[in-house]
Length: 300
Ligand code: GDP
Ligand code: MN
Image 1 (cartoon, rainbow, N blue to C red):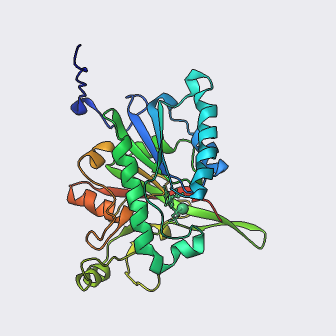
Image 2: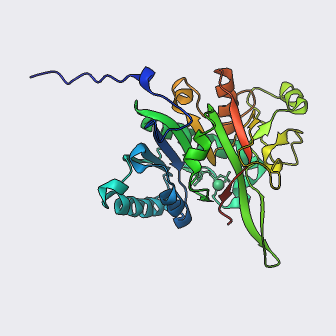
């Protein structure tokens, strides 16, 4: 019998441009999913980027809640993928995690400083498993999209890709109501510009110690993109970053292919998405942020 055919892929023919729609560049949307929110799914379905250029990848925790998520996700996927051919995504992969999550999933517990290293290490491993198993040879872009991102502009992919950056992150906020008035506040503090204070702080740390952002116990004096939102500012204004958050994050696939991943250990005293930004920088790539381009995180 004939040996199995050898597959050839021309990675040098893969483009990433400021117009991935016209240039038929495939986007892999990756979501670690501890909870299934209808608003996330509806927002995903509302994206205007052509679905035949989108592949989806999910990773679901290995827990009882994971079973529930899996059921809901499977049902949602089946509905789209068994519908009209023109509305189907190019491919869908669902992974079940092979390790357990150490920390409880409510907002207060998982944001406690003491829980950060273990929790973010677990998150980093989930992200790495997801990207290493789904990043096929035809993918041009990877868009990280957390399962609790419930509202974005529908032109999200086009809008971020337009900047044609190696890595680009919008500003992640949260809606809330105060005395009956609808307001917004910053949610993700992982997108920042490095400070001298944090660098000095890092010099005194042990090899396994990490600095995490957004905690008053750790005064880094880094400037956080979360606070750089300008009322009435240009939504496409760009700023160079040193750390990035992963709630919504567009990455050229070559950045991951070159080896940039989410360190589940202290890498320059950074972990997970902030460590990813550092690793990408060490590989010669530059992360950027859009302080006035808002996406919204679920409010528990
Ligand atoms: P936070 O918003 O920074 O507090 O982080 P989240 O807890 O929302 O986690 C970020 C993303 O990872 C979300 O999409 C979660 O649904 C998902 N997630 C959280 N923990 C796990 C986990 O242990 N395994 C997997 N597969 N996904 C997770
Ligand atoms: Mn979240």
